[in-house]
Amino acid sequence: MKSSLAALMAINKVQQTLLQRMTKQYQLTVSEWQLLDHIGSGENTQEILAERTKLDTSTLSRQLKGLVKKEMVTKEAVGRDKRQLVYTITAAGTETVTAINTAFEKLSDDVFEHWSTDERNLLQILLNRLDKSLDRQRTVK
Image 1 (tube, rainbow, N blue to C red):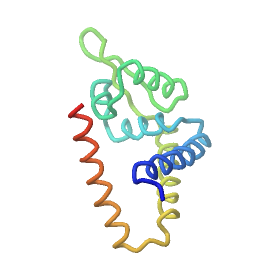
Image 2 (image 1 turned 120 degrees about the vertical axis):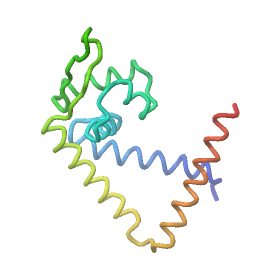
Image 3 (image 1 turned 90 degrees about the horizontal axis):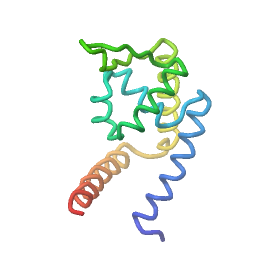
Image 4 (image 1 turned 45 degrees about the vertical axis):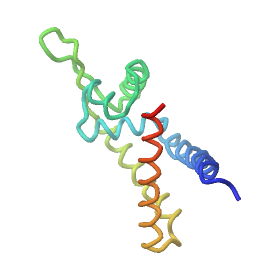
């Protein structure tokens, strides 16, 4: 039997493969989909997006540039010196993020199809607890 952390690593690999397959159908990476979802939720500046996504500015800039090139978002320079950029999701971006989110929900439904509500709730409780434990480890080191 695998240890808990080893099992989580294996599950993560499978999940990443499934997510990559899902987003590739829409010519996006998993990271671009998640970023597009944030922008669609109204998080529209690099400062806000960097805080919420925990991405460094160069990675975030590269992903935003890719989304602009793919016409999923537009950017507008604002402020007196026009140095701050505000990103807005386009109609194509909204359609794409909605389609991927729907596919993600279907994947979730399929994965947990044979799980009872109690089992799903217990898993959620345990995952939240694990997240807090790992977060504590990250801040200790």
